[in-house]
Length: 237
Image (cartoon, rainbow, N blue to C red; front, side, top):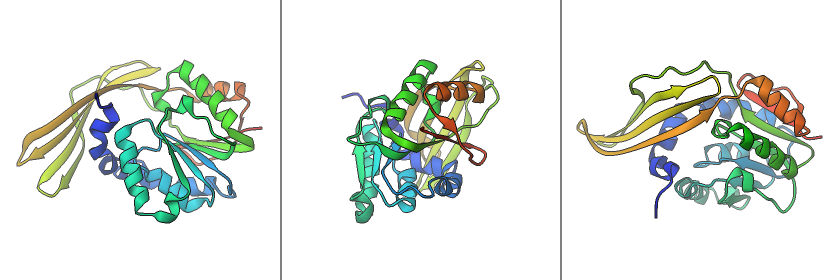
């Protein structure tokens, strides 16, 4: 069996993301879910860091979409420590474009997932999410306009001490255009400064402009809402 890239790098996920966007999302997301009492669809649940935020904010069911086996394993382990939340979270082992719920939900949440979709896939994504949302449902995701990356040598992006080991993440831009960047990441475990484990992952990231997103979501029938900087909210009619 060939392990997917996310499974191979899952041990680093919480270390890196707790040091990144997750603390901010914990503050900004709950107000955007105010009043939601029905189901929530989470696209790209990962290890469940944001799933917990949603579960602590809304009383209804959560449908957590996560295609990576390694990420799902950590997510389910996290849920095992929260029996009340475990009873409300259904983990779906599929990709976003294959999500198909038994009944529509009141909100869809997508954190740090958008950049993995090429333009044709984004069109299908908005159509898929529109089908899963109730009339008046809300779509919430994070987005920022970022400068075009500059190719260069690897740089340390995160370093975390765990017992006697150091978990280190290096990243570099391999190529970049205004629309897309290819990046290479090295996930290393060091003991006494010596690399004892390393996984290298190369991925493409797509950076749509706000104008592009507005056109795509409008074509899919969504209308814009208000959200703090770094997040966008759209409503299904």
